[in-house]
Amino acid sequence: MADDSSKGNVIKGPWKKAKRISQTQTEKVQQDMVYVDDVAESVMIPMIHGLAENGVDIKSDRFITEVGFINESIRALLFRHLGYKHTMSDFIKHIMVMEKAKTEDLYASFNDDLVDKMNKVLEEEKDKKDE
Image (cartoon, rainbow, N blue to C red):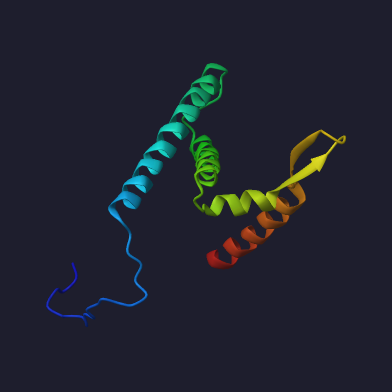
C-alpha cells in the first residue's frame, strides 16, 4: 500500500477554460449510455444463443474475445448513431471498404490486405517485447 503521508500540490480553480456541464446534459449522456448497453445486449444475447444452438463453442477464450469485438463494434455503431465518438468507428472505417457492384448496389467489403499487414506489424511488436 502506498504511503499516504506525502501531500501533493493542489491547485484550486476555477479555470477560465473549464466547461460547465449542466445536469440535463449529464442525465442525457447517462440515458444514452444505458440505451447503448441495452440495445447491444438485446442484439448480442440472441446471436450468442443462436451460435450455441448451431454447435459453436461459446465457452472458449477465443470465442469470448471475438464476441467482445463484435459487441464493441455494435456499441460503436450506436455511439455514432447518437452523435458520440468511439475509437472502434475509426478502426472500422479503415478495415472496411465501400464498393459499388452496380449503380445502386453498395456493399462493404473487408480489407483483408490491410488487416494482414496490421497483424504482421502487431506480431513483430509483440516479438520485440517478448525478447
